[in-house]
Amino acid sequence: MPSLTFYGGVNEIGGNKILFEAEGTKLFLDFGMSFNIANQYFAEFLQPRKCTALADFFDLGLLPDIKGIYRLDYLKHMSRPAEERSVDAVLLSHAHADHAQYIHFLRTDIPIYCTEATKIILQALEETGSNPLSDLVTACDAFTFYTNKKGNLSRVTRKNTEFVHERVYHLMEPEDRVTIGSLEIEMVPVDHSLPGACGYIIYSDEGNLVYTGDIRFHGSNQALSEIFVEKAKAAEPKWLVTEGTRIDSTQQDSEAGVKREITQLIATAKGLVFVEHPIRDLDRVNTIFEAAKANKREFVVTLKLAYLIEALGDLAPLSLSDVKILVPKKGWGLISKDGIDSKLVEQDYAIWERAFINRENAITCNELRKKPEHYVVSMNLWEINQLTDIQPKSAIWIKSSCEPFCEEMELDERRKRNWLDHFGIKEYFAHASGHASVQELKALINAINPDRLYPVHTEHPELFKDFFNNVVLVEQGKKWTL
Ligand SMILES: [Zn+2]
Ligand SMILES: [Zn+2]
Image (tube, rainbow, N blue to C red; front, side, top):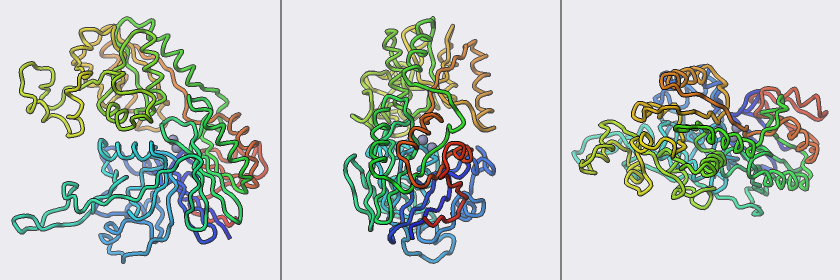
């Protein structure tokens, strides 16, 4: 009998880890981090200990203790015997942490199916991120020693390339059906708040399953979500696993509306315009770029954003040559001093950052200070200390991201306000969600018309019962025989 087991995404937004088993084939739908549970136990300076490998994660319910899916180096460190691989693949819907972060813990021989853009974003997270749990595309052997040139034991790091292993990725194209074990899989792109998002249709002799991943119908790729619904409907699925983030919200967002609002705000601004946005939401980045262009201003991006735009290449809606790159002062702050040897300047920057600091379109805070009315700047709390270099006058700040949804984020928000108050910067808001509204979710479910409906990625799965009589309220870790 086929079955579904929900190890995450249950009564919470994100953390999706859903095991589907049919005809002897086992697939995970996403393997994400649960922010809810992680935030209950951990904070910025209280993190899970690497030395305990997976034990802390199992103990606190952050990861399920399943045999045959976790990294052998971690299991060895926990004195657990090596296990045979027990899962055929992970179908990854997109690169947001609540769907992808805990790939870090998976065996490197479990194949991961996703889109090309998703893999590029994961690669960017691995190379430019500060999260220690980011062995997403490759994995470096943990708790391992090697014999160094002096004949002594040293700890293995990423510099010891023979200990770094490529994970197995299969890049999916729309229309391509692939066979995994006894199942046939189709990837269907959807509209969401980062490039490369998709849903999946799994075809089996015992019935078909549709998984939405995260989906919306109001971004610049809304046509993709409509095609997804058509394809899912044609599959006549027995089971639909749908996201339900905004089942309690009737608000109709639109990316086009955000563009109008930001364009107007820039038009009335006299000084610099800072925009705070989700860094990997390239739809939003393009919205801001176009709003800046409509006002004859240049859009200035951070080094991380520059890296991502360049890495995505043709998959990004804009090119790096369309924008300016802000090189911040770091460490010794030599970047804005004249006549210093470039080798000395570079030492302030990570290797990946050095590729950008001497570009023709790279600028420093000096330019922003000299010509504030000329620029719109991508900015966030983590780089806000540059305001002291810029010394903005009559600047505005547009928050184009979601409201804080946990204590930690509220504290960050308060810290940000202090910076804005200090420099007399007025804050405005313009945002559209990455998720479908209740009306859109209802239309999606009515169109696909599954036999059984499994809402995940929502704090209110019970609300689906108001509209549908085939809802299954899933429980954490419980196996549903289908
Ligand atoms: Zn999500
Ligand atoms: Zn998402």
